[in-house]
Image (cartoon, rainbow, N blue to C red):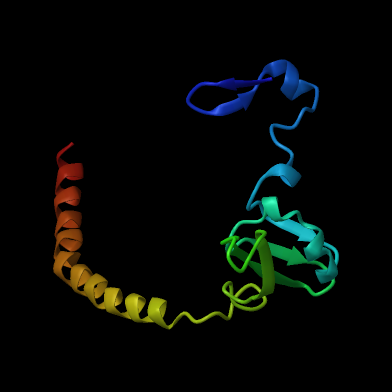
Length: 136
């Protein structure tokens, strides 16, 4: 059984017996990994959240869910649609990093100015340490 304190955790007995804290198949919006894109329809709608990401093994890609809530006027049941997700970039990188590059180059100027302004402290302190070492 789980204990409730500042965080949710298993008791020592449950943990040592291999009991899971939660079964991922029952967690809405959890990251899923499935064999084929045809299996996307097998994920129960009540376990899908808007913008949920799912890895599809045979396609080696991620899919993103768009959750459609029933309005009971024209849509009578909640549903989800899936589309390839490219928000992480391709192959572990390669996404649009232009904003990051702009930030990095602007911050580099400030770092260079800080180094220039404080470099005299580093060289001046060396002479002081030599004198202090000679004293002791």
